[in-house]
Image (cartoon, rainbow, N blue to C red; front, side, top):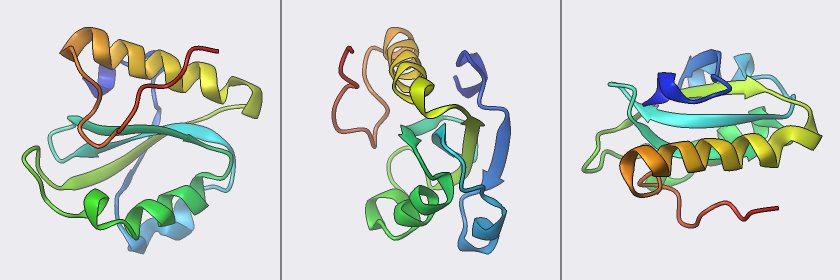
Length: 112
């Protein structure tokens, strides 16, 4: 499913503290996927690096679950004014394909 998101999250890093210095402080939208590329979480951030580190501090987002262990952080750099639109689009694309939100997303992105 990850490769079916439009616009495509064109950058990929391991979901690990060891690469946190490689994550930019720019704004963008991102997914957290398991090793097979299945999306576990969709989000947005005005500072990707800070949000990346926050997720690594969450047991829910670092431990293995029914869908596997979060393994990759895939992201798309975007202007702040586009973040909500891109995130909402990705959430709707995922929900249309699967019939539900990603397993680690708690609520749907509001329509703005």
